[in-house]
Length: 139
Ligand SMILES: [Zn+2]
Image 1: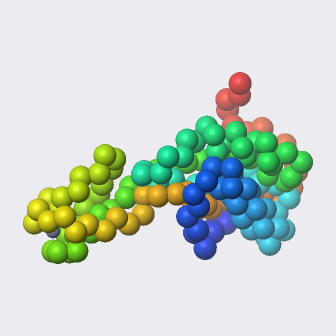
Image 2: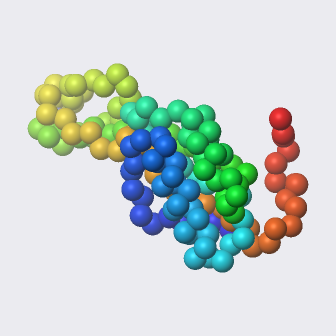
């Protein structure tokens, strides 16, 4: 089952972010009467400094003893988009930022997205039966 998270708040600090991710996921799972959270799908902005491993690290610590314990975090990178205020041209940007519009050469750019982390959706399960078929690898 896939639960869409409607409020995509972009959050800025890894530990606080991970707490929020967990809180959002637990709340959504509770509303759906889910017994376990098996995966959380996250969107990470290209311009943010988040490291997947450290979010996963905090998550593993914070989720202990909750229904989200053992959940897999999946990360999707989101590109930032710059909009030229002079000509309206939109283009994808990735660090290091190019401060010039490729269309008109002006400098008045507005950057949208690509920053912070958002919870996109979570995957939950109703029962606590073994789901050994879901993951093929372990370490
Ligand atoms: Zn332009």
